[in-house]
Image (cartoon, rainbow, N blue to C red; front, side, top):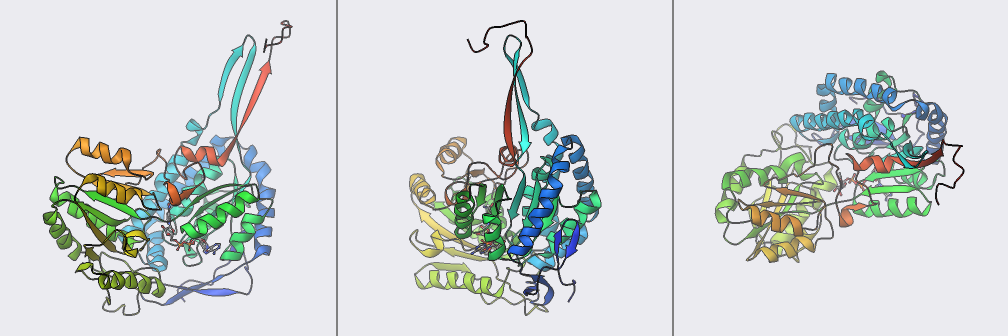
Length: 484
Ligand code: NAD
């Protein structure tokens, strides 16, 4: 095995996570690269105890002092970017350049966390003569963060820097499919000077997640993953009276109008559907082609042909994922859709045991087909033809999900018409992957997100803090009741 067997990280130490373990399999060649413990309630209890012990001292530090540790952490991410990217490539399967881009985003969110001292300052106002009201933010307490397989470094970092700079202590439960990056994050936080117990990692699966949702010592839970599990975690955490913010799956529509710039649209759509092998919650999954756009579709297929598995296209996460994606393609074909580019049965020379699916473009998909409605999570684009913009909008609006939607056009008026009406939290105009960059917040609508705040940017301040309102009277000479 390339990496030693993993341990949990609790109270600043790597400790045994129990006897139950599973293999960590690299999607690029199917080899076993490590093993990960599948811990249970005991490990969660220990981590909560460690976090509770660390909380009083950590939360009492001024925010400026806490953020100093994250300036160092940011430098460590920069210094180690190539090693961290190599690790993501091996455990997740995405390409090295995509892995580097992932760390660059972790750096950007850490940079934002270092600016929280400017953004999270309280407010004070004299509300009556000699009487002031002050609003200050306090950390929520011990919090947990549960993450998916598709961004082993970035998604944990969506929450770690912000939650910790704001004074919380955290337990991270990473995906058991990509657990190695989580332990590297723990190493770097320790090296940056984070006190023991402020950040802990408990490896595992369903049992750990359920123990997190149920533990009375955890005040807030953030989750990123599939909608099915997002619903379970939201319901279970909130029924235990915790705050919860759970991000789910996606089915993102790109609406392409006949006046769109051909080269820009084709290259953006191809990059959006195939980046990270289509395993992004912001990936283009359905292109809604309005009217006559055959020239754009032809160019898009040419662009997609340049995306070569094992070179500029990574692997999908597992053998099961490859089978699931290929089944969607086969089913669409059987139902009468036309496959313009077929990524099934793809083999990469020298990586025959890897889990690769080539870029796939399917035309004449009907809105009622499964491939038009469900999350495929692979490098597959379903093209749905419509005659009018309103028909295109109604297809987008009827999706269960609502993470991202984009429009490609050269008309400002049409772009505005569609972006106002699309039912999604993140909208792109001539942008294939409309991820809002800091200080803007990341979060979708509908069944792509449960809970009121967003997970990054300014909106996350609300989730990771509670507001204290203090009213003070400093004029004893005045006897009147200030409310009167
Ligand atoms: P997943 O839901 O299978 O797993 C996410 C986490 O939940 C993991 O840590 C896993 O161990 C845990 N888990 C799995 N099954 C569970 C169960 N029954 N009970 C309790 N916990 C359980 O998701 P995944 O396959 O790792 O990630 C892919 C999904 O994540 C896609 O649907 C993708 O769209 C979504 N995603 C969404 C966003 C977003 O911002 N909305 C971002 C990234 C990924």
